[in-house]
Length: 160
Image (cartoon, rainbow, N blue to C red; front, top):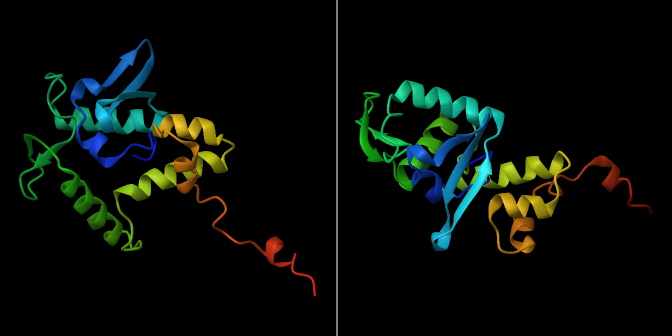
């Protein structure tokens, strides 16, 4: 969700063949709202994490299988069923709590964080819109948290 600005429903709906290679570059295919397919190149860290996950999960053979499968309780054994958006939220909440992060973190946090990080590193709102598969740049700007932080320079502009 972080590297693709994907909605949680698009991520949990991915099949093994939605992560694929063309030449040396890995790609991620997302099934977005309205039945639209959206393809983005995989960030090198996303590629590293997905490759490790696929190797550990052992379900690389069946290309039509869910990419992210649910687990049997806390056994670490995977089922053949996909995780749900509720499963994903519980995982995010559990991991953020164990890391001592805010209880407000949710799946959507990754979308906003990804867009903000992209913009802070010189990305354009137009490209962020394309990556996030937003219809309008106004929607993408709602996720932009680059201006949320008030710094001392801004406070010093107050002249009395």
